[in-house]
Amino acid sequence: MLCVCCAPCATQSIEKLLEEYEITLYFANSNIFPEDEFENRLANAKKLAEIYNLPISIAEYVHREWKEFVKGLESEPEKGKRCEKCFEYNLSKGAKFAEENNFNFFTTTLTISPHKSSETIFAVGKNFKKFLPIDFKKDNGFQKSLELSKKYKLYRQNYCGCEFSIRK
Image 1 (cartoon, rainbow, N blue to C red):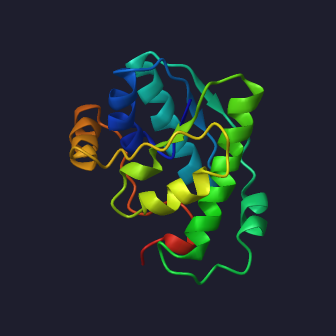
Image 2: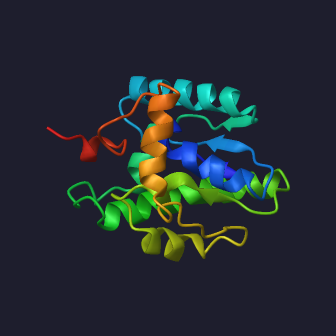
């Protein structure tokens, strides 16, 4: 099972996983703000699921729950403690979904971004028994995701998703 933060990051992640696995996409991103941004990213994730003919499951959007989870870390910089806490929140949702639906493993598209620390994601992920640490940045993964995003005409955002990372 692949936790999808957005369609562009999922492109190359899907390509890589399909070499060895059957996968289901899981979209659980209560960190995304505002809600219309969440809806836009969800629409593109659904579009990508159709392109690859993959099932996709969508978690309920509960932004206030996420904000409570990262409370006190609002002024942290990108790649700081708030991001680590956000990874914990999202990976815990993925772990629960993987367990409830009998998936052998789950992983995340987050590692494809040059703006995210794969080491931090892996450190958080090791706390979840079915987490599979895959660094999708390897082998020019991010560059390939840019090319696939253009090919499929996917919406590319300019911030990670939370209101604290919106670039002015």
